[in-house]
Length: 104
Image 1 (cartoon, rainbow, N blue to C red):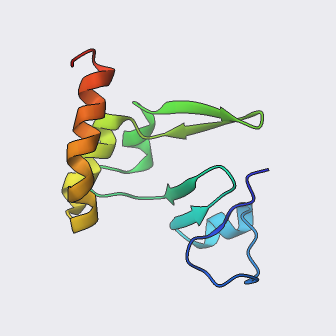
Image 2: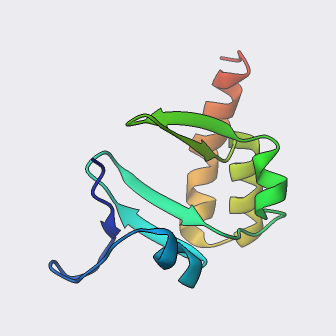
């Protein structure tokens, strides 16, 4: 199990990630036993679900399929949002994209 929990929340705060919880909020920043995870119902730069799902990658975790934004879409949304921490990540993401495309 991934045991998702709100990143930065005090230990012991009641939290259940289920359909009801997801329906109440748009975005979630979580920590899990596997990795940190951000669930966005909306992102800048055309990052609405219908736009992102067209190019999404899919990961299989514990028998379930999870779509996640492609690198080009992630780069575009981080540029559009423009927060310092997002802009700082762009160089690494662009290197990963170049490697993915077969560059050096």
